Each structure stands twice: as C-alpha cells, then as structure tokens.
Amino acid sequence: MAMMLLIIALVSVCAARSPENPDDLPPRTPAQNYVITGLLRQPAGLTTLESLHLPEAYLRRLADRVIQSSFEQQLRLVVRDSGPALAVPPPPAASSHDSTTTAAAMPDPNRRILAWLPLGIGIVFILAVGIVLAMRKGGSVS
Image 1 (spheres, rainbow, N blue to C red):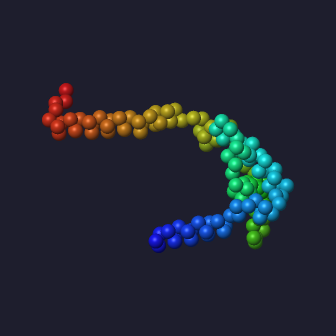
Image 2: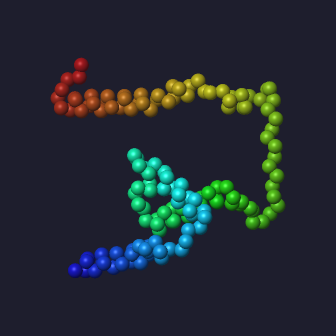
Image 3: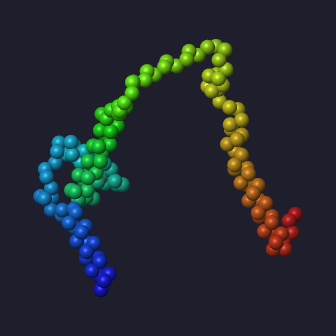
C-alpha cells in the first residue's frame, strides 16, 4: 500500500513539472522554431525525428540547450576580471640549426614497433597462462 502511494506521488510530481497540453506553453521564439524545425528533420534510422511525435516540452528544452551551446561556442567572450591584459609573445623564429623543431616534425621510427608491444606482451601472457593451466590438469606440453 505504501509503495502504491509513493508511485502515485511520484507520478503527480512528474506530471506537475511538464505540462501535457502544449497550449500551456508560451509561444515559440523564432530561434526555438528554427532549431526545433531542424531537429525534427534529422534522420532517426529509416525515418525522421518528426515521426516519433516527441513532446513539445522536450523539444523546447532540447532547442534551448542547442541555442545555449551555440551561444557559448560562438558569441561568448571570456574576459579576465582584473590585471592588465597580457600580450602573447610571437613564436620564436625557426632556424636551420634548431634540432628540436626538426625532431618534432619527423616521425619516430620506433613508434610503429612500440604500437605492437602491448599486443605481443598480451599474447605471451595468454600462452603462459595456458601452459600453466595445462600442466595443472596433468597434461603434457610438447
């Protein structure tokens, strides 16, 4: 009985948060309308998201997150709170005798060998475990 009351309470709280009737929501902003239209045209398997009939409240929440993300990526400027602006020093000019830039630009010839090292160690470990297990069972290893 207590479990049933808990379920009813949870359902009522969830229902109070998201309106079932789209008329209860304020009208879409032009940015929301543009984003939601684009979202509904996105492919979802063999069909589009529009055929899934997602709730309007969910689409608006998703559109708001897309708009916020776009704003943060393109228009938001991060400014220091205090202190003078620091000028970025120009990169040092690369000379023909500078070995660090030449070494960084050239690939390491041992890199290919080192990429196979974990695989080789794994195979050796598996073989060693197999031999130990075979010897424990009384089998002979030839």
